[in-house]
Image 1 (tube, one colour):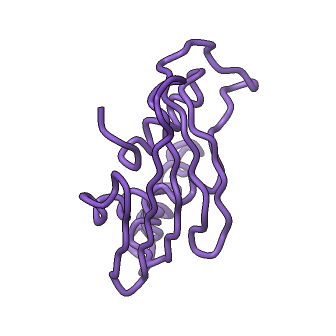
Image 2 (cartoon, rainbow, N blue to C red):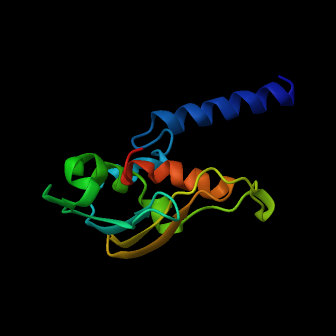
Image 3 (cartoon, rainbow, N blue to C red):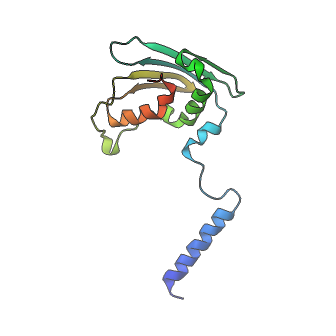
Length: 149
């Protein structure tokens, strides 16, 4: 048997063993944070534009399922907890910079805000705005945590 088909056969056999082994297969998706019962304690500020009043909200999600929310989150606390837990990694890291450290300099909207508090005992203090393409991607990911409209 020529070397190339032999290498291909060996690679396929190795892949089959890995996928069929207990715990094998693809890694869990990045948003697996949502399944973890972490404690969420966040405060939010939001301003629709520079002339609008500054609005406030809070969200506390306990691992045992108890939820406390105020402000615009009071009518959708369960959904807000799900989003915060699903976006834990992003909220802790903040907006990513574009490839090569650049982002498209386009303003997507005047909205701005701040998220601060703790997720799984780790501090969060993130500005939210729509002033470039990187910040817009971050804003869209956490958009369900802010007022509608």
